[in-house]
Amino acid sequence: MNTIVMKFGGTSVAGIEKINNIAGIVSKELKKNKIIVVLSAMAGETNKLQGYLNQFKSSNSIESDLVLTSGEQVTIGLLSAALKNLGIKSIPLLGWQIPIITDENFEKAKILKIDRKRISEYFKDNDVIVLAGFQGINLNGNITSLGRGGSDTTAVAIASAIKAERCDIYTDVDGVYTTDPNIEKKAKKINKVSYEEMLEMSSTGAKVLHTRSVELAMKNNLTLQVLSSLTKKVGTFVVSEKELIEKEIVSGVSYSKNEAKVTISGILDKPGISAKIFSLMNENNINVDMIVQNISQDGVSANITFTVNQKDCDLANTVLDQSKDILNYRSISSDKNVAKISVIGMGMMSQSGVAEKMFKTLAHNQINILAISTSEIKISVLIDKKHTNIAVKSLHEVYNL
Ligand code: ADP
Ligand code: ASP
Ligand code: MG
Image (tube, rainbow, N blue to C red):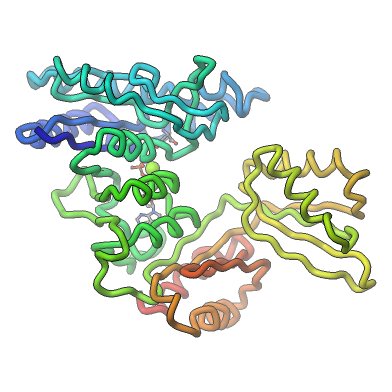
């Protein structure tokens, strides 16, 4: 018998009616397969828990992950009860019961190991395992979380560990679209997208899949399907590049409002300064994305601007503040009112003119570019947050998506 993994996101489990709906979907698949269901907390629940935590200085701690991961405990218990009501043999499990072993980084832990043996044992007496997404346990025995949106990663990791036949990610849209369908009604559903493109889309803000879930699926060559728990439509398949017949020049536009821009002004323009700044960020586990450096008018000092996740902005400022004597800069400033807009497409590798079109379109809409970064298949720009919607819509149109 095959095993498939079905992951349901927050909106799909928000309330008893929806949980009963999932029990129905699971029972249909059960005729041919053993199933691992991975669940998120009910929509809004993790935000609510984060709100409680914000009342204390508790980020990246034992407490924060213990609290943040608690919403999933509720949904797995309820779904397992709903399945048992239908006469299905099911067991609800938390991350530590598998166990899903992670590293020690609270709030952004990485999975190190999953014990497959235990899964086969649970399947001896059960047809369905209902597993809490988003959580694991570190080697000190503390509960960790995989970062917001991390249930997708739990699903892909478990599917890879057991070499599942399929991994279906059920959400509130019926697939991956050319841009977020909630901000551009003209967005179109994509039938197949490559791992590489999906990775760029996710990492630049398309939260329909957690970035690390795509990375893991690509590494393990696991096909993902993104589909809706409310319709019966076939979803979007995330596959290897070989399986794509046509490579679009631009296949999607994404945006992220979670960015913050940090500028260090009046720093010496000499070897080793950037190395010092970015090792400080690395030591503090702060991920840096775009980087721009320019020489100031005196020709001796320089300014460095970089972007970090908004959540890390205050920490980045503190770290730089504490290192003022070593770095010897004039001033630092930061701005959270920025957004990153990206265009992504495999065909970009062999076509010129994509950047020109992007910059012209933004200029035409009077949108100033604050920073630029590129990869072989992506161009990202940083702009003022208030222009996000108009930038996404006009780029979506200009590339005929
Ligand atoms: P879940 O709770 O099921 O994990 P998420 O809210 O994390 O769902 O992800 C689904 C959301 O992703 C959609 O409602 C949509 O607004 C957003 N999204 C952003 N970019 C895209 C895209 N390119 N295609 C589809 N959805 C997208
Ligand atoms: N409940 C977690 C969150 O809201 C994990 C997830 O939904 O994937 O981030
Ligand atoms: Mg999600």
